[in-house]
Image 1 (cartoon, rainbow, N blue to C red):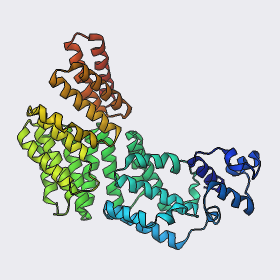
Image 2 (cartoon, one colour; image 1 turned 90 degrees about the horizontal axis):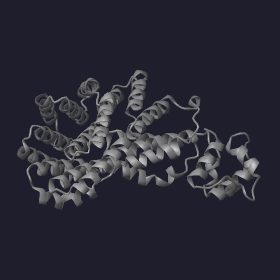
Image 3 (cartoon, rainbow, N blue to C red; image 1 turned 180 degrees about the vertical axis):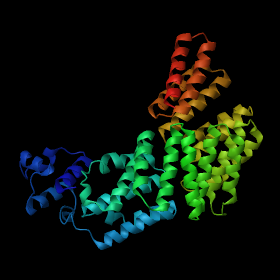
Length: 418
């Protein structure tokens, strides 16, 4: 966390070479020494470098001096990310946009980047959060002795979340567990336990997911954090669905409904969605359709709702009800709500099933292969097994035994990882 590191980071963010910056100011060797923190530039040199990089001069001065004003702004932002709506977080970021652009204190700028990452995650802008981590947060050389304890913990938390979003669920879970041991705040421990449960869920370790989800639920109930307790009930329910314990899963969904307040639209949408999933697994498709329609209705009232998963489940239910023509007419709506490559993989898998029902086997093969490749890339073991099993069955029926065997091997590899 030194001046040279800041200069280098700004240069790289602007896509410039060292020669582009130092030309006509100082020699390339001298500039390289500045970036590598082997030499401290003069005030005159800093002024010229700031102009060349198009940043305020103050951005290269007083870099180790925190200000009370910025600390108060950052504390408020942290509170809003934790407690307030997505819209309020975005409004606050917009209000202080100019102050956040170039924060002189390296320590306070670093803390802002960590908070900005969490704000992007809250707004479900996962790809932007990943880019921020890789292009800015990871570029800052950290000297932990210069960080406050709270910043150190926030860095560990953000890094664990980053690994979760890039699909490295094992690393994410391990980092969260290290933070759990270090932390004494019950509310943060509840959130960490929830995230550990999510990591285990994505690793298909459902017993472990249940353990940590129940711990999170108990802490949230103790702290009267009803919305987050409801989220934990949801996570417990979907873990039980994966264990095919559908009646018990329904009990936890109903407990979630029991603590819902009228304004908890997001929680209600998730509970209705997962109840629809349970009914779908029980092949009670008409009842499932009622529940998924309720989920979508609530999501329409939420600005940053993930509509994709509910729209997709609704179309899967309608496909089981043999409403093929209507399903085809709604596929553009599904496509318009794709946010991530994982969503795209799910779309290809679903589209493949539609083509299969229509008897268009060439398009079925194209899309099922696309989905398998994307699921491999994003380490979704459960969906990868479902897609490869589906394809293996089709290949065997068409006497393409070599390729069918390859798909079965892929299933076996996934099961071993699970």
